[in-house]
Length: 449
Image (tube, rainbow, N blue to C red; front, side, top):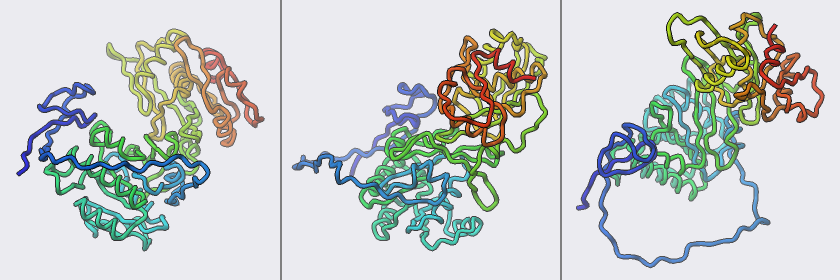
C-alpha cells in the first residue's frame, strides 16, 4: 500500500509547505493555504532513456496554421483570429456572468464537430439552455461526466475538433486521492488535457471558476500551463460584458470583445462608442467624453464626476471604473496646479457603461469632469478630451492618437483636446478641430464654458 501524507499549497502562487500557515511566505497573501493529499510512490529502477526527437527550424516549409472560426467576430478577435488547433483556452469569470452562454453560442457556430463536456449540469439542463439560445447545430455532442479518464476516451474515440470542459473545478483524475476542485486535481487535469490537445490536434476550451478576489481559482501555474487565458468581465447590474485576453500565445493580449446580455444570449457590440454615449445628457456639469484604446480599437466613453461639500471630517473619494489611487493623485494635482480647493469636498467618479479603464490617457478628462462639476460650468458637448496628466500639471502625450481622432470625427464631434507633443504625430486631415494643450490650466480654459 502506498502511504499518503499531507502538504499545504497556496492557492494564489502554488507555494508548498508541510504545515499550515496563515500567511504565504512567497506571495504574502493571507489564508490561501489548503490541505492536499500526496501519494508517496515507491521508487522504481532507473530505466534506459533514449534521445528525444530533435529538429531544426525549417523556415521554408512553415505553413500558416488554419484556425477554427467561432463565427463570433468579437470572440475571434480576442483569440487572435479563431481557435488554434492543439491549444488550450482557459475562460474565467464571476458566477452568472455568461461564460457557459458564450461557449454554447460559440459551439453552435463552429462548423466542426464539438464535444461539450459538462460536470455541473445535466443533459436536460444543457438542452434547455440550447433551446433558450436558439441553438440548432447538429455538430454538438453533449457529455455529462467529471471523470477525466472517460473524457479522454471520448476525445480519442470521437476525435472532435473542439472540446469544451465546463468546468475544470468539477473534473477529477480517479488515480489521485484529492477531491475534485483541489489544486492538485485542477493542475493535473489541465496538464493532461493539454497533452491530449497537442496529440489529437484539437482545440480545448476550459471554463474556470474565480476566487472572491476575481482571480482564476487554482495556483498561477494553471495559467502558465494553458495557451490562452481569457477573462470575462462585467457587472451583473449592467448588460455589457467584456472579454479580455490576459495571455495569448497565438495572438495579441491587447484585444477585447464587447457583448450585451439579452434574454436569448449574448450579442456582439459592433459600435461600442455609440452604445456607451447613447444615454448621455447634453446639458449637465461634470460630464466629459474621452477616448480609450482597448486593444486595437478606440472607444469613446463618458466620464462623470460629482463634487459635493463634505459634512464630516474626512471627505469621501469614490471611483467606479477608475483606479482609486490614480484619482487621489489627480485631485492633488488639481488642488496644487489649478487652485481648486477639493480637500474638503466629496468626489464621486464614474465611467459610464460599467466599463473599467486603466490607461492614463483618460486623466485629463477626469480632471475636466471634476473641475466642471466643482465650478458648476458646462463642458463643451462636442469636445473629446485626451491626455495623461503629470504631477507638475503638464499634459503628456498618449499612443494611437490618430485612431482616437478618427473615432471622434466619425461620431460627429467638432473638437478634440490632445497633448501638445502629439500634434506632430497627426498626419492626416480630419473634419474635426484639433486643439493641442500643454498643461491642465490651458485644457480647463478650452473645455469649460
